[in-house]
Length: 149
Image 1 (cartoon, rainbow, N blue to C red):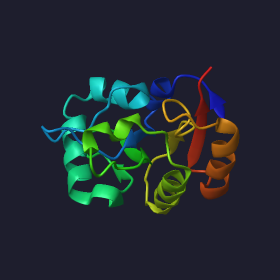
Image 2 (cartoon, rainbow, N blue to C red):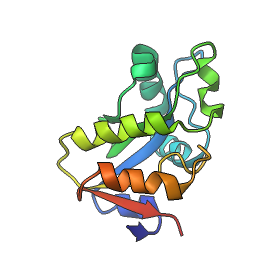
Image 3 (cartoon, helix red, strand yellow):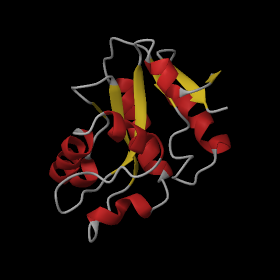
Image 4 (cartoon, one colour):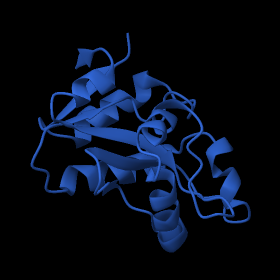
């Protein structure tokens, strides 16, 4: 575990995990309106459109994925609201989805170290005291938890 700004860690050539929702707007873009997702979308303007199209295609099966145009990993923490995909971001993070995403993340072949926040614990309203131990259990030493100061 390290304390600091995850974007400063990104400058060191690592991959950054970005917690996301599974959803899309009418234009197909994912809603990335807060937290690290918003910060990532501000840095990479076409990210929300790319990810929204993936969500729309894969729906509730949207996987953890490495974004091809930047060193980030998109990590679903909020489930799809099938009736209102554009509102999926309003839900709390889902611990079962986080566990599924952690298992997927741990199984991906990665050629760089990865920094990961306490997924689902910002705008997802979960407690780091419950999520971080699950992260530690399911992830190996390729992954470093970054705690915000």
